[in-house]
Length: 66
Image (cartoon, rainbow, N blue to C red; front, side):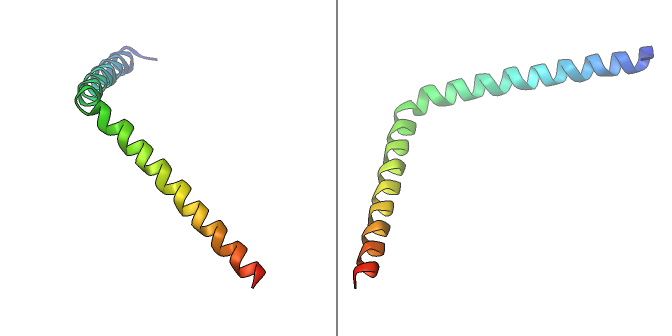
């Protein structure tokens, strides 16, 4: 690799490193502010999915019996 490509690659890696650091910092701050919301939303989504699956199973059972 010639010198200009090596420098360009190093700048690219530095830029990616800054981007990852800034993104991780932003996500940490966001999670601290919304931590309880995330857990609550996950549980609501899981219970909704379970309820939907249960209804589907009941409908399928009813259709096969009648």
